[in-house]
Image 1 (cartoon, helix red, strand yellow):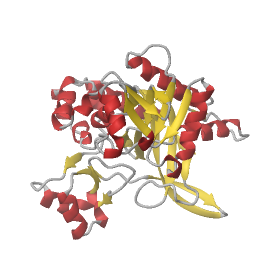
Image 2: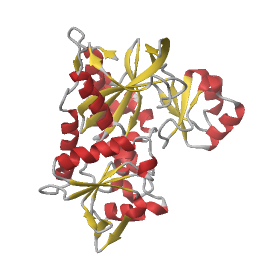
Image 3: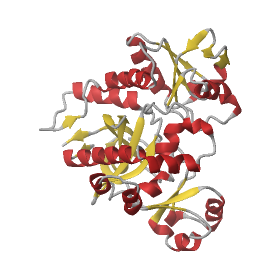
Length: 366
C-alpha cells in the first residue's frame, strides 16, 4: 500500500492528541468513574504494549476507526516489511517506517514497560498468555515474539492462562516464576474464572501485566470515541487547541440509548454500530444492513454508533484475476511512538484474514 508522508504525519498527530487527551485528569476521572472494577486502576505507570490505531484514508484525510490495546500481528507485519525491504522492488522515493529495526524496537518496548513500572534490571521470564494459544490464528505472531525476546536473552513462554498459578505472592507457569506477562487475552477486565491467577498477580503487583485492564479502559473502550469526537468537551477538559485540531476528523460517535434510538434508526445508513467492549469486528453492523431483529439486540446491548467512513479501496491481482479489496492502516505504537505502519487488506463488512489476496500488507510512504 502507498500512503503519503502527509497522511502518515496526520495519523501520528492524532495519536499524539489521543495520548494527550488520555493523560488529562478529567479524562481519567471520566474513565474510572464509568468503571466499576478496581482492576482498571492497577499498575498506572505502565503504557500498554502493542497499541494499535486503525484508520481509513478518506477524501478528508485519515479518519480514526478504532483504538486497540493488544493489537496482534506486530511481529508478523515487521517480518513482512523486512522481507519487502530486502526484495528487489523499489519505487522512486517510497520508504518503509523503521525498516529493519521495527522488531527490535518492539522488543525494546518490553524493557521500557518493565522500567516504567518501577522495576530495575530485566525481566527474567516473560509469559505470552492467550486462550488456547496454539489454536489462535495469530499463533505465528506469538512464536515470532518469543523468538525475538529469547534472542534478546529473555526466557519467554507461551501459555494458556489455565497453566498459571498464583502462589507465595508470585505468578508461576509450572516451575517458572513469571515476572512479566504479554497479555493477549480478550477478557479485558480479567473477570473470567480461568484468569483468576493472572488477575491476582496484577492486583498484587506480583508481575507486570501488559496490556492490562487499565489500558483497555483508557484507550480501547469504544465509548471513549464519543469524547474524542467532541471538540467542545475536550476543550472544556483543557486539551490544547493543536490536539483538538488534530482530532477534528475523528468520526462523530454516539452512545446508543433508548433516548436516541428513534433518531439513530432513522439515520442508521450513516452509522456503523459496535459493542463498547467489542474486539475483532465481532457483533458489529453497518447501519444500511440492519434488520429490526438485530436493532432490538443492539438496543439491549452496550453499543456505540460511529459515523460511517468507507474503507479505502485497492486493486490487487490474485491468480491473474483483478480484484478490488478494502484496507485500513494501522499504526503500532508504544507510549505514542510509532513502531510500525501496516495495512490490513480484506473483503466484506469488516477486517478479516480469510480473503484471498488479503491479510497484512506493507505500507510505503510515497
